[in-house]
Length: 540
Image (cartoon, rainbow, N blue to C red; front, side, top):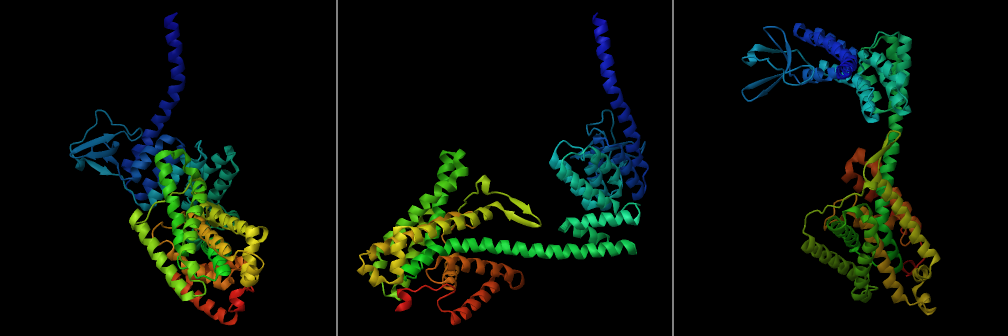
């Protein structure tokens, strides 16, 4: 009974093992042909034969060949993967990559390297991609298709056709079809089929498609070259449109940052007529509040890190609003009607705040991390959109909406608008204008602190953070119209988009100078900005 059981097990093992051994025995002679391949063309033929087997084990010798480690012994043309550790020469089996027992050489002079060059390495990359076309991982299959597409190697057609038969994922299947179209262009297919392949590649409309067609442009026959030229022109036109759309997105992104930095200044300047040179430092305080919150979470509750910004938002508002309130009550209220003294005083406060932060946190940049939901990017057509910028745009518009509601639907907002239009009449109607001034300054400073939370995700958190935005904030406020929220929104978006369209041609510095000149010329015609308000500053 025991003998029968053992015999049955051995027979089952033989059923599964025998085909593997037979396949291995078929692979070894092909690998051995590398020793006889005296020319690069002969090496390429051996690579094609190995790739055609579809056996994933051939990846071992192919990778070794690409790395220049595949050598053969001169005495018997036996092929090995050779590693050298000090003076010791290690001969590894070319199929398994494991040490070949009983094999040795006296020195490296007994071995000769199989010929390899960059074009063969590209062929190997394509072959390896073909071996991974049926991987269980969607990511691996996509990467394999992209490699074949870039290589445009006709030898991958057979593997692609086989992979297409079983591929179910629609995204991967489209990638396979694109790779097949690329491989067709270097195959012996007829011109009509190649033109269809060119049309498919043109439909991709991306930079890899343009690079591929440009590579094949010079060597293509006349009829195919005409289709390739038309495809290149079409892709370039499409990419130009996407480039403009990308610049508009960059401009909206920059505009949202300027909106966050300037919106608090707009209401402060509009209601109180105070040029607050310390507004940038309120932004800085919000950014450092975010840093402190994240440090506390890292040390005490790392699981809450993804919620760190949500925790930091109210704290940043309170910190900056409190500092702003103390600043208004202790200093600015004594300087109303004296704009030059107010400007100098707030500038002095900004220096004090910067030095205080340097003393507490040091002069170097501080790391503020991105939560997982603000990390990474995604593609929209040929545009790349980062999640942190997208969320900042959403956040900027949310802040704008909340502030608009406060100004138009709350008692404080009604008082602020009354003081803006006519301070003396508002006081005569019983509105406590000093209290309105204090709350307005606190609100504007608090919004600046909230802006610092957002800016900490895209800029260096340092004592000089606010100085990077204070000038741009004043430009936005003056251009849009002092004290007008809609003017601030339009001004921020306009300046952001114009700046991003100018940068590729004039550079960042010259672009800003050009915008400054345009705003100066604009103010000559409209001194009160795009959306002017009637108020005490105007009437006086």
